[in-house]
Amino acid sequence: MPDDFAAMKLFVYGTLMRGMSRHRYLKQSRYLDAARLQAELYDLGRYPGIKAGSSFVMGELYEVDAQTLAQIDAVEDYKPDDEINSLYVRRLVEVTCMSDGRTTTAFAYFYNGPVHEHWRIAHGDYRRYYSSMRESSKKL
Image (tube, helix red, strand yellow):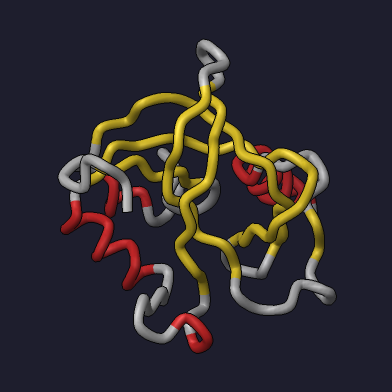
């Protein structure tokens, strides 16, 4: 657990980002910076997931309180007492802030299932991927 449990950092990379469908869960949280972490990003259908890897995933860094983190645990179907049956697992990771290159430790949710049948988003930017998919579907 981080030293200052009252104000923890959370890295988000998908539907919790600003302008995305689940951002409402972070509306009361403090946005800190655009950030990235080292992992692989996958399209899981209605939402993305990350797995450990050597690429970079773009996202946003927030300061959240314990109540918000608990709500997001529920959204991500993370069960701290039953990680084997959780959809995502929450881990402390090192993230890099895009504005100044500094690194910090933050929580991030990693997909807990297999990804061999899912599309890897090579450029690591879900917002860009989602936007391009929406534009493609409008052209059909």
